[in-house]
Image (cartoon, rainbow, N blue to C red):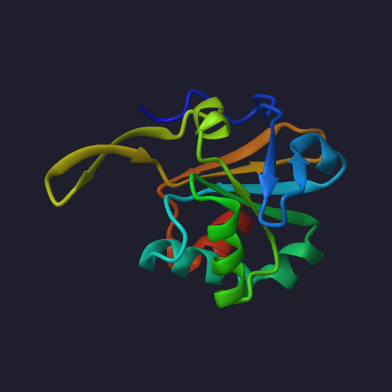
Length: 152
């Protein structure tokens, strides 16, 4: 199942714990554009490529008014190691209970080399200053993710 959300919808508000144990809510970012990206697992090849692309383009994204928030089912401790290892300059929220993931509808059937299984569907939501979803990127290109986000 892919997300039920559509561009133009209000982004569901959420609260979650980041890598430092701080509670982060989407409403904390009102007045700023948010890149909310859901990824399957810390320190795996595709997820690392995606995170490093966002890291390498972070200053440009900030100059364009974006905040970057990543969410995966990993723990806060796993996020700390991932951030430290790759020097990621943005917040990662731990969602091991999949509350936020389910809220955004990004958990569903996947197909890898013909094997079907259930897992997190790599998805990015671009949210405007008022909390409205501007764009949804399903299966984003991990090596060119920032470019996909900023392209109109």
